[in-house]
Amino acid sequence: MDLCRINTNNKENSYLCEIIQSEITIEEIGSVTVYGLKLYHRDPDTAKLDGESCTVEDICEDIEAVRHLQKLITELDVSPLHLKDIAEDFVSQSQ
Image 1: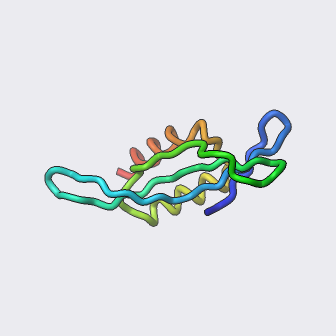
Image 2: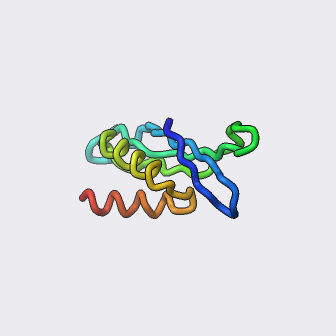
């Protein structure tokens, strides 16, 4: 997992960004492995994970592409509020 630090309201928030894997079934193809991202909020005072912030389960089948997106999200300190929109933009630009 990669650590993503985001400043909000003069207090630093930290998020861990993890690649997740799941299986979906496509009628014409069958079972397919897809990858997504999950951001976990990390309490800035205790450094403990205090819950899941946001998940996008099905970004694409290409794990390298999802790794690239994960890197961009952590480098650019993306807020969990924007994760779904960014993932959608990423998929539409990749096609």
